[in-house]
Length: 102
Image (cartoon, rainbow, N blue to C red):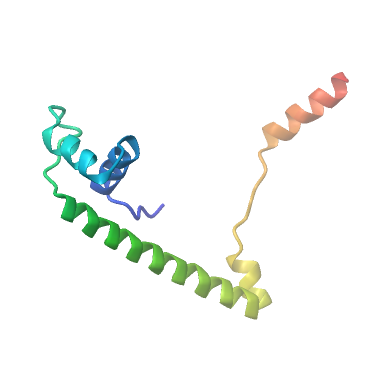
């Protein structure tokens, strides 16, 4: 699987989710005693990261829209580029057993 967010971006975003605003998150990241959390970053750096993430989102959406456009134009591409969803056999067997009990 392709990871679009770096570990550092994930760490910063997780801290922002926990905090009320960006400044507070930056404060916790900069002054944390925990080496897993500690990160030297500025508020300006966080907003630059937001810009990079928005660019990644835009590029990802452009890619998906391009593929969907090709799928709409060709039945063969639609068939080959559609993700296959496989059902788990164990789940089916459990459902059959539950129905037999009723």
